[in-house]
Image 1: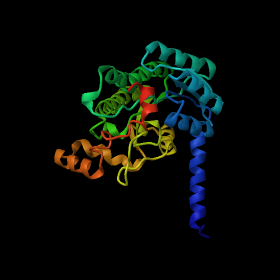
Image 2: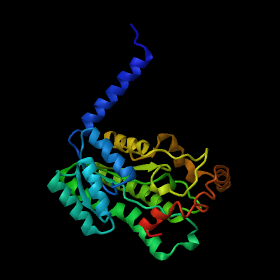
Image 3: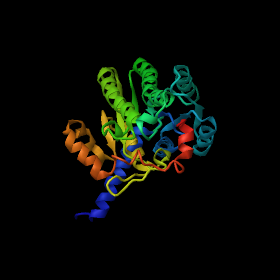
Image 4: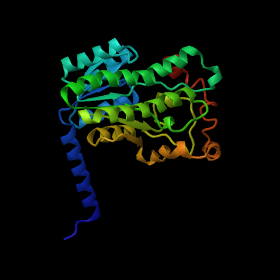
Length: 290
């Protein structure tokens, strides 16, 4: 007798959930920039799947509160400081266990005219969004290679594939993360360590405060990004967009410039990150030093 379609779907969903829990149960996962937003949501979802989670963030008060809310270890972390990165991983190993998965999630997104950026903001963005990923990847990978296994998930952005007015420095940093991660995966996968990139679209976190999206450029909740991060841990891939429907961005670099310019105009992203509401974005801007 054929089962009704809803019952089949329900069984498939249950099977997927069981496989996910089996893959994640007991794994030690460390997440940077996890006091808020995507990092916090990912920690929540991983805990629900049976992982053992520790979180880090440069905001000591925020990470302490987030850790208390989640019931996990929370550690102050400056991803731009190699010594801080080492201390973070050391403390996670001492308090929770050897790190099976590192999620390099910490990042900032300044917006506005490139001509108005000061040097401090440019350097800060590159140090957090790109150098922080490189430093975290290197320190974690050294430990993982010595053990013969491990996984690193680097959170980039679709902006790393979509050069956009008003996002210039962020575009450059995230493009660097995407190519860096693929290169390190090619170098280390034969030694038991996989490196993946997850590329979120515009997500409803502080990063898009003061920005106006539209019907063609919609934002998604952090749960959609977390689902792809968790899925990438379960089934490692070199690169995945979040949500998966945004995977078309990987062909964008090969498109003719005239076509890309037309797409920017039609979607509104040619001005979206230049014409923003400074008052609505004030809290986030102050937090990132813009």
